[in-house]
Image (cartoon, rainbow, N blue to C red):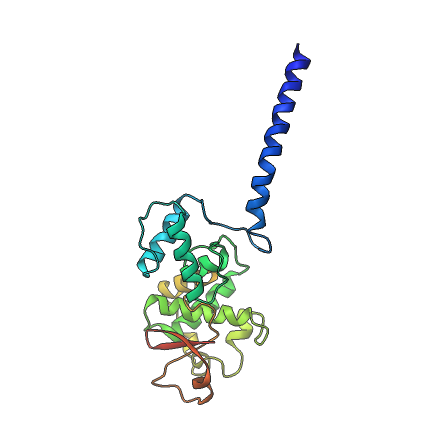
Length: 228
């Protein structure tokens, strides 16, 4: 009797698995090629979707309700946001899209207290009079350069590259950072990039380099133009 009962359970599990495999295959096929875990997509629910909807609504991409349900309206809004910001247009909110939205990416950065401290010094020296998002943006430019093969591959290497930052040249990098400078540096290290990948910024009222004006401007935050 027990053997028959166990056999029926095994058969039921096998049938359930056979029905589930095609569904899982369809889902994972849409996400083929991703090097990071996909975080939110059509059909997702929860707090992260709420935060995505809030950001998209705040910036005019989403007109629906903040309900934490990744439905068709959210999907369309995400695709439009991706299109406008030079991201892969697939309606999937992975680390890159989350970063562009200014939300946690779920990818832990490899950084040290020394990196955080140096980055905070640069933020304070370069952007202490800027709005908070502008301070994060300056830190993000440093990190974007670290990831770009045309620049040194460390935070210290980028910051101390000759002629790269006025705060290093005039000694303002040695000023003691505020708690806000540290927070801005930490937010950038945690993945927030308000510049969407820019590797240059400058104040158009004080910039003396003719070359910097040839770079395509992506956006302006405070007194700084951010360019690629």
